Image (cartoon, rainbow, N blue to C red; front, top):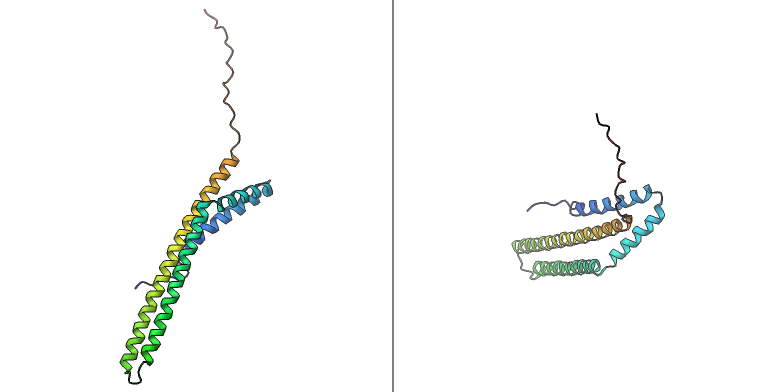
Length: 167
């Protein structure tokens, strides 16, 4: 069994979120028309956040996480009840019976914790994808707002001809 860093599971997603936030803050503070541009960015982010695609992703992540948390807590509760029941079931239970029940409960709780960890990882990946999609949409919207109106290309003025002197 490999050990996992309890705080390392969401580092990648946190890094992306912090990078995007830092980029936005730096851009707003660095521009002369910071407040006006801030309002444009805020509006674009709100419109992206409120799109059905993003909200569908958010809702699916919430539903998935809630379903996993509910099933994990039920599993843990059932295993604890089974452990207590097996340990105190009969007054004639031997030390080996209690040890066996405790080991079984330990394994089942470990499985439940692993399932919870996997559920959190999967939810984090889905949220990471939703953040990437929202950032891409906001970037595209900001780029479209920032493009100046295209000017028609002008041909350069013709150069005046000079008469060549011959010999």
